[in-house]
Length: 138
Image 1: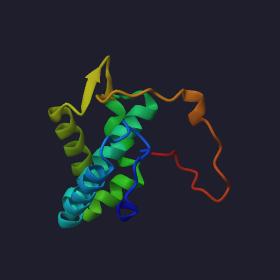
Image 2: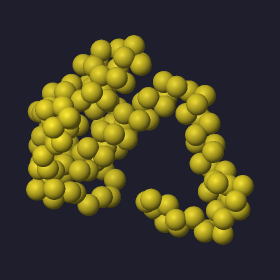
Image 3: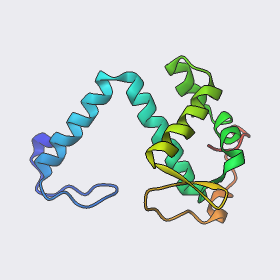
Image 4: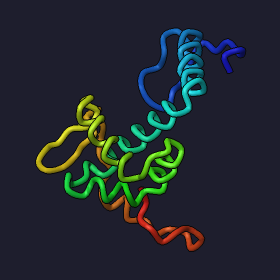
């Protein structure tokens, strides 16, 4: 895409980059870092998925966060890739994200710290196609 020399890039989120070539170069550098550090890429993905889940749900009660994470297939897969148990990964994910300020404890709930608009709860009450698993989404 960068070889097409676009004048404008319309991102899926965030501001429109003022310099498309620089935006592509930065994106390629970020992607290469993930390729060069597979464990770091898994951690990056886990942090992003968890933060988005918190945004979508307008937080999760603090006493339910780890059980929520343990039920998520993505966490189980990430733990396997990092050669740790899901319990260890869940605890470390919450601890490190709280310490970094990426998530916050507010009114007994863990919330994503980034600015966002929570999703209305009724939007999440959509039945799944019959071929999908009967488990709750993560």
